[in-house]
Amino acid sequence: MALDVRVISPDRVVFEGEVSSLVAPAWDGRLGILSGHAPMVTLLGAGELNLDRPGGDSDSFYVAAGVLKVERDAVTVLTEYAGNEPPDELPPDAMVFAEDVIE
Amino acid sequence: MAGAREVKRRIKSVENTRQITRTMELVATSKLKRATDRVHAARPYADALQEIVGGLYSGEFSEKYPILRKPDHERRAAILLLTANRGLAGAFNANLIKHAKNLLEELRGKGVETELHVAGKKGIVYFRFRGEEMLTERMDIGDYPSIEDAESVVGPIRDSFEDGDIDAVYLVSSEFRSAMSTPPRTFELLPVNPDGEAASSDAYILSPSGDMILDRLLPAYIRNTVYTAMVENAAAEQGARRTAMKSATDNAGDMLEYLTRTYNRARQAQITQEIAEIVGGAARLE
Image (tube, rainbow over all chains, first blue to last red; front, side, top):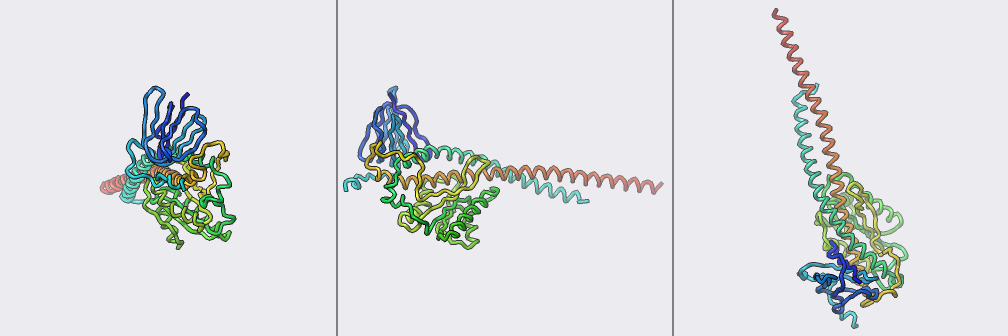
């Protein structure tokens, strides 16, 4: 079983395809997703998004801020920034806001 | 009979005009291509964001979140109008302005206070001439607007909605159905009304929590809605300009045809007359 993954930034679809596993920078740390994951919506922080293709290839992008949604083996990653290099400047929403949660 | 020389001068002038309108048509066509690509590129994000926000949205949040609040009645509303910076695009700007003006009058008729925010030189110039006060006047947004442009325009408006200074925000812009069809429309930007089936949030693991996700996503949602509208508006502008310039070029062509015919007739008449004169003169001498 594979995951259908779409990585979308405001001005383009960065990646669309089948992936066997994915590791994303969630707001509270790195988050791994495999097929059969429970439905979930989580905020993203900033960092590298790794995608492992079924054939053994892998892709990775830098993403910053946004949200990730898993539903029935379909993963949608919405991010304010996506690129091969880390952004020069983090979008304001990409702040690591763990402090907010601890309060 | 109009002198052949005058007709010739008019032909020159119409030819020049046709050259200009044709160039503008070509420029608009290439800009339209790029602008349309941007419209299509922006859609997946907008749709996916809409779906997620719609899925998380539920009535109980609206009391907690200023950005979701639904005022009982409108006391004060903001209108955000997007127009082009440049003209020569047919009725494009005029339609948008008329639409905004009607909305403004309708709201005032209902006793709602209004405030006006305009991005685009044509709208600004019009309302300035009418003596309307505008809280935002932006002329710096180009043919290819960015997310940052959208944020800088809508950020302050969103803040004043959150503070409760205004109760509704209407966005007036052009819908980009196709290059030929770009009708103006009014979109209720705030209060947020994401129409997605409100999936029960129990079905999902929400991390950190539903309200915190919404807290981050709603500003992004508003910003992105305005961004999409700007991108569509920019494409609609190029579409309208291309259509207008195409018909101007065609009209110039028709006019040239007519003028050329008139010119030839005048020239022929002149020659005929000269021959008649010569023949007449020669007959006298015999």
